[in-house]
Length: 284
Image 1 (tube, one colour):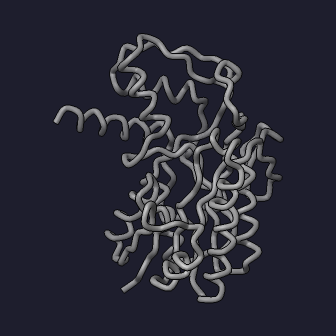
Image 2 (image 1 turned 180 degrees about the vertical axis):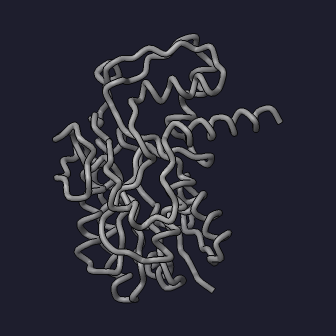
């Protein structure tokens, strides 16, 4: 029986991956807070020992709070990833590590591929980039998958926030100068299963097909949910925050398309289906 350890397995992506992996014949072991600390070396060793492959979904993701907790953010997102690589290399285990579009920072307006120069704009992005580097330097058998603008049923995200706010307010202002692709964690989980089957190595970008601004995404959510809330575009400067966000989160996913056994869905089709399913559940 194939054994999979999911670090951060109770999170939004980890939850969808747990379900998809179990349905694909994997015996899944979830490691997450409060019982599991990725910064605890002994616990990390036990997690790696328990499985054939490891997927690391665990991360410090409080982007703004990271600006005042840089050491904790670095410990979780970078140093722990390096230790995971070291342990996995010694044990001969395959690791899939999840990273982020926040390693980039507006050096270009074009879709960014795996060879483009990173330029993180905040502590969170810097820590995730450092984690990628430490894992790669460990020389373990691994793949790093950068994802962006993820949403799912098992956690808070941009889509759930917009739906909540839209039921409370007659109008919303939404940022129009940040562009990317809202990406369902269920689709990320499908991509991870392709990697577990084929075990490619290296760095890959994964996102839904196409691009949109946050404002355009919010418009679709409101329309698909049949809400009357009006949505107005605004610049990111209208919502100042401790951590700077990149304006360009567009991914070039040509490399990962050669690995996948499915066609990445168009962002608006996947999101429309997701919001429609939420509305159906609300009616039950």
